[in-house]
Length: 219
Image 1: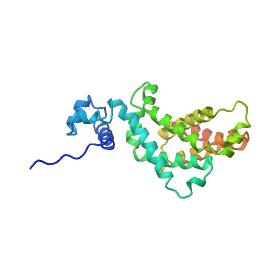
Image 2: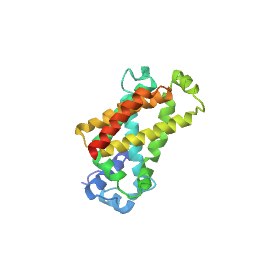
Image 3: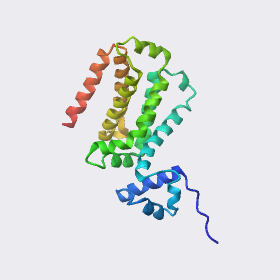
Image 4: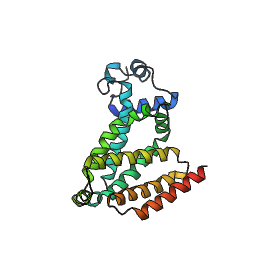
């Protein structure tokens, strides 16, 4: 009696793809090869994805979605201000990245052209900017509007740049349990909010000392 094949889902295809890259240190040669080696029909792939490259974007989007699902399980989450929600997001997001570090490092350092590597983050960028817009509270919106030339899109874009900077720091972090990334997150998020509130001096000095210490230790 023939064994019934397990149902192919979006998440299963993503897992298969990550496993292939980790075990072969390269992408599948084609959708046909990828489907054949994982014992499912090529047409099933196209029910979820248009290309192999679209899976790479989906992986980082899934990391984001899993992060939001986890932090929203906290009963107190809805009572947090924007800064606390952002910290919660960062710590959870980088825990998920750390659990998948081998794949993340491989994928983001795969091409010598860094811009090609960053294309994988395009879906993450869209979702993260939406998230930032959603967590701006009325109180914070009023505070931001006191600043000249305030634009919500500028807040979203600066938050995205901050996430990229933190991601770069994490990729280079060799400390146990990536504890230096945790420090970086605390200081950078605190600084970004104090900059928006136009009272940055103490945090700017503190963050600057941390970066200087890291730089001198690496050299």
